[in-house]
Length: 186
Image 1 (tube, rainbow, N blue to C red):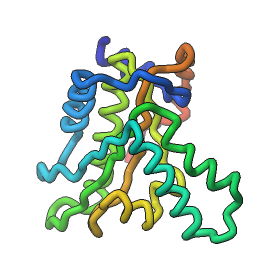
Image 2: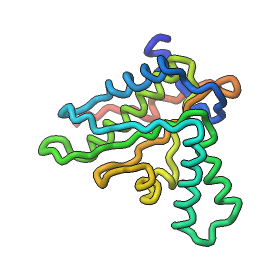
Image 3: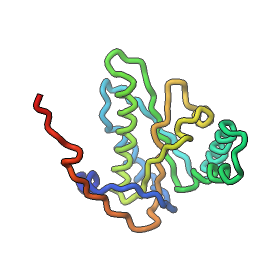
Image 4: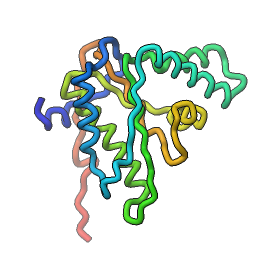
């Protein structure tokens, strides 16, 4: 697939089924992530892969986090939390590793990790892999971070859900450029 085609036509694919990306496809996903813009060459990211039965354990971690936050959580809410990681055969947790640096502020490092996630989405689309970027409360929950082994200087940027599209991809909407682009004349 041409680079511009991937950039112009990538869409989120929320309904994902088996199979997950194979080893060769995953290698390309991660290689694309590592090409993200990176001021200072800090490589302020790391990735966790979650698949198979580990998705069920992650669902339990999500349910625990919900119970810690809300001791009155309903059985339906807990069931929903448990099912979240089961929405795709492979999840990649994109983690920003923020480092003290005199010239590269924290915000740039977090953005770089976001660019790494975006690179993975584009590489997935280019390979015909369905993918969607999700966050939600469980991306910002301290209990989940601890359960996933995050250090104090780390934060979850994205849960990338990857697999085979259950249905035909929707078409990317055409947006009016003038709604987003303007000239500044001083």
